[in-house]
Length: 380
Ligand SMILES: NC(=O)c1ccc[n+]([C@@H]2O[C@H](COP(=O)([O-])OP(=O)(O)OC[C@H]3O[C@@H](n4cnc5c(N)ncnc54)[C@H](O)[C@@H]3O)[C@@H](O)[C@H]2O)c1
Image (cartoon, rainbow, N blue to C red; front, side, top):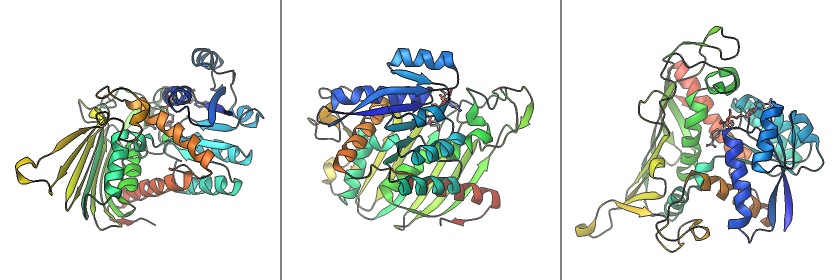
């Protein structure tokens, strides 16, 4: 088995999720010819990164990402830092001729995203963006059903991603824990953070967006900065809703907020075709709900398909446990690593590439522009 030496930048939430995936893949996908090796991890605080390296099993650590990118013993760099650092790091990794796996959203805006996509393509390096929900087995199953044409002509796509963690005006912005509320670090609020997931899945399942009409709201307009203590205007969108046309003629309706009390990570999607419909909910992520109008009338109704039930028939499920033993959030990252390694062996790109993720970035820019101008915006 050939080693693929990983250099991870950022050891927060995603640093942990990805590291777990690198560790699981060789055990559960033994047929792969490449094995991720935890070669080095980087974060700014020496105490934090030393602890992380020890706990998760990295061979070494750095406190300056430039040094990690320059190291000759690193094959692939994984970018798990706030959004405002993605571009600079990805460009440096491409320049160094290394593979790059970047967290979402790809960039702060579409101009940056385009520059990044061009850089990795010019350098000819393998690249991928962590839109991990594509690899939730029930969502992958939805893709197979849709691609089989089982839904018939698609009329509607609707999706939402709801949270409630920023309702209090006392939550600060910026700094280590609340960079998502600082527009300088995040680029946007729920649009780039949450709707980007919904849009990526929607494009994957239902094709390109043609145009958008959006509204955004910032409910708390001033917050204290976590590092300086200064009260500053809030530059992100707290909530965003938009409608769109897809290129296939269907209509889309999307909503995201961090002000839906009681919701923590309520990502849902539904797609309605002439013959059948599909529903999925992250809170019950191993189930795909399916309604088929062609069923005999006496038994017609919504089915709840449990992706572990059918003897490994469902995507990825032959790798895991016995029927009815459930599958979780972390598996989506394991599957994404496995697919990346398989694509390397087979010599093709692993989707979503930077070029694929740029579509979502372009859509996010159009959504924010539409909300600001209060009119429809075409997707270029
Ligand atoms: N795919 C998903 O479902 C998903 C979920 C959460 C976050 N994300 C994305 O992952 C990225 C990271 O988010 P997170 O939740 O892990 O954030 P986090 O705040 O938990 O971790 C960020 C890490 O980056 C490090 N960091 C910051 N500046 C750095 C620098 N200059 N050099 C080196 N390290 C630096 C911090 O020390 C920290 O370890 C973001 O782009 C976010 O949008 C994706």
